[in-house]
Length: 137
Length: 227
Image (cartoon, rainbow over all chains, first blue to last red; front, side, top):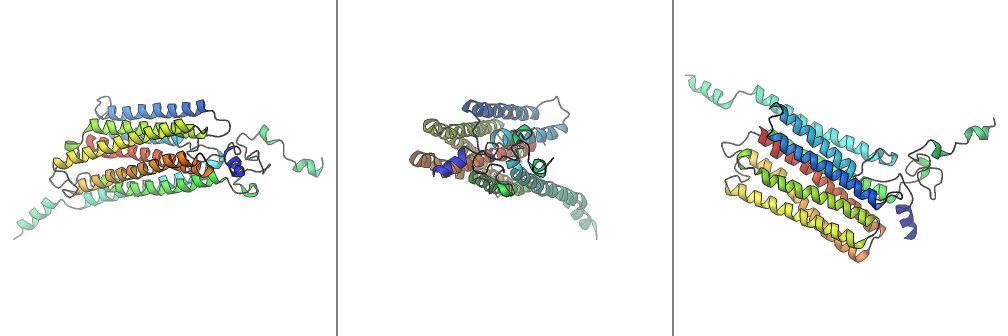
């Protein structure tokens, strides 16, 4: 158990998976500062999202885009400050898996919205079709 | 210049800030673990990676619910629409609860990192209380919506709404059960390596729930209201 503990906790300074806080050269103060920073940034972005909804500062249709940008920014803050996703070499696998996950999510959500909107455009509204059939003798 | 001099690598710390050549200072002296001759990566890295893959697959699951909800935005079938029944204040309160719980969960990880039993338990407990407050608020919201005629069977819009928000709420419920289990395990078994790895996984899970909630309040509540 001692060996495992050493290998787990004292070695591998640059060798941390997502979510793991404590490497050898991280003090408690640094850890708390990191989470405080993430919390402040995330709170700021959340408040901005709720504020943007009712603002007249931005052109109406742009609000949805702005909300999307704020959400993506906040997810980024969470990944970096809370889940400790870094560019360190031992995080390469995690980052690659995340990239693949984002690809799938974009395909599912973007593809669904795209296809269903095109279908809506191509199909005639129901009232119109029923009106036409009723007019036909 | 002899062959041995050419082959000899310079001292890695001079040019290798990420210790690609010296993954750890321990047993495998000259190689990073997880890189070929360096041997397998440490168990913590592997466990974190595996759980990360599970979380990503969970996010893909959620993306299907999100896609359904986005497609069914206007399918209210003459019934009440979302903006008529959403309570922005309650959503803001739920967001605050979950974000703060994510923060205290991180603080519990810091405390567990230095093996401080008291603060680990205190922060885990606060995390649980905030998670429970979130769930109660959400249940209250659901009850209020149903009382005003928006149950899942009213229209496709409300079906997809209760599916995506309910799925997140279900995840929070499971997370709370896990949280209670972890508090008991940390208390009775101490900060053993396997318990520490479970704490890492729980932290990742809880932060992932907050990420899903960010997407959820943006897509379902804010953008839904903006339309």
